[in-house]
Image (cartoon, rainbow, N blue to C red; front, side, top):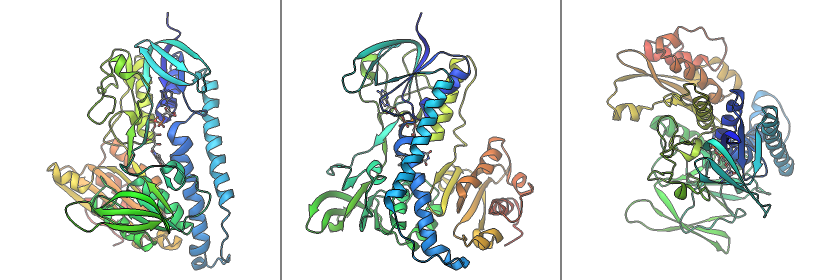
Length: 469
Ligand SMILES: Cc1cc2nc3c(=O)[nH]c(=O)nc-3n(C[C@H](O)[C@H](O)[C@H](O)COP(=O)(O)OP(=O)(O)OC[C@H]3O[C@@H](n4cnc5c(N)ncnc54)[C@H](O)[C@@H]3O)c2cc1C
């Protein structure tokens, strides 16, 4: 008889949620984690530390630039970067300790070490630092090993001067010139932290737009706002090398396509943020016969089963958006499936947020995507400049866009650029989860004065007419 019903390899949001849900459903659960703390990329080096620094740096910016306009004079704020980093570290600690507490509470056995699949029912755990090996047995295995930063050919990361997001959240002084490679979510968020603290930030992006994958209008308007905040963008360009120069780092950039002059830019730090890749190193997948797709992700069917009986996979290591909550939902779904229930994830309704100021939040499809798939839609838009609360808060940057099916009025996508967008997006997510229409949203009473009224007005515009525009 195996010791466990399920062994989960990796304790990120995918793995730890799967473990807790499985234990709640009465399964005997073990988790294998190679890090010293639980919570994976998200809690240790991703979502949580980045949001702690985004919040703290926004407070610093607000004290220096925003408060005086509201009649609050505080003088020039002084940065105590060590204290800001201590706040970030304390936030991480309380979150990872929280996961350890939940493991105990739910009687989940946690093994510290590198997990390797020996066979469908066996996982070998090698403790870090030569602490020995042991093999544990189980009915099912869930691979939840996440992802790591994609390297940039020709650029060697040292996590001091040339950093990934991990080093970018650990800098001990504010770089005078920060060059960010990649205008995706992580590059813009970490770029925002250092921009607010005083860095000159240049973002180099291969494509001719920022925020690849997002609605084009949202990306364009957001770029304008970031430019107003002092970001400079080099779009349609690629970084071909970084070398130590006389004045900091010499960064070679060239046009992304075709001919054109190569150029040298100077920077004090370079942040490489060109994406993340699935992490499967040392798991023994080839030996176990587990198939990967063309991008190195573990292939799964709609029930998260790999091609090998009894082995499942979830989170960043499989296809889909690399988002903590996507992994969490997959984790819960697999736990339910293992407990004999019908777990599933609705990939049509997975919100995505860029935690800059203003925030950028999206759920569902963008205009280009709808056009490409030949769907006829109506777009309703409402700017925050016309929203009373936004004016009162001096936070009028951005807009809401609701996209609804032209024939049925069903909401297909909602896009918000604005302060608090990351919280406001969820009313759209709930609406879409229930197949709601723009009229449903428009007829739902919203409290006044709130930023959320702009969401309702955009729905009114998609369905018929807004009132306040
Ligand atoms: C800077 C940054 C900011 C981010 N911000 C956000 C955000 O705001 N919102 C959001 O939704 N997402 C964000 N993400 C993405 C998010 O962190 C990931 O989508 C999420 O962590 C994926 O969860 P996961 O459980 O699949 O894997 P991970 O969180 O990567 O966890 C995998 C775990 O598996 C362990 N592991 C790997 N191999 C083994 C092995 N063989 N044996 C034992 N353990 C192993 C790893 O040590 C790790 O702890 C951010 C990422 C970064 C880098």
